[in-house]
Amino acid sequence: MKGDFNMHHTPELTSHETPGTSSVTLPQNKRWLALPFRLIITAEAVLLFGQSVFAGQFLSGTFEALRTHRENANIAAIVMLVAGVAAVPLRWAKRGVLWEPLACLGLFGLIALQIALGEDHVFAIHVPLGVTIIVLAVLFAIYAWRPLPSAQRVVRTRSPASEDRT
Image (cartoon, rainbow, N blue to C red):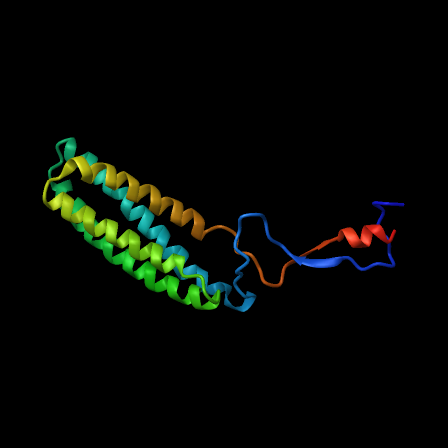
């Protein structure tokens, strides 16, 4: 009967992958490499979200918040570089995925531009760029904490050929 499981045929093993995801997986014994990157990029998102809080405090009349805003921006830039360094072992473990370190470098460049725009009082670009940086950092942190595909996890599926034999 078509569609019934036939015990004489062994289903094919295929890797667990959803459409649009990378087939690059992190070997089980190297999955710990993701933890430093995850923690650092999460700290980065929190630091960058704090920038909006400090800017809001300054605009509300707490003028000391401007100094905190400036210092936090410099810390955020350094932490983004550290995140890029933490992403390099992931690239090696995944054997070729280069976008995480490049994304960290790109975000660092945007933060550096943001700092320069703030120092030059170009607020028409500084404010929307700041919002964009925060959104990108939060999305990057969400990406970092997604479940990692395992190279050892497989899903049993029936191939169309095995259904024809039943």
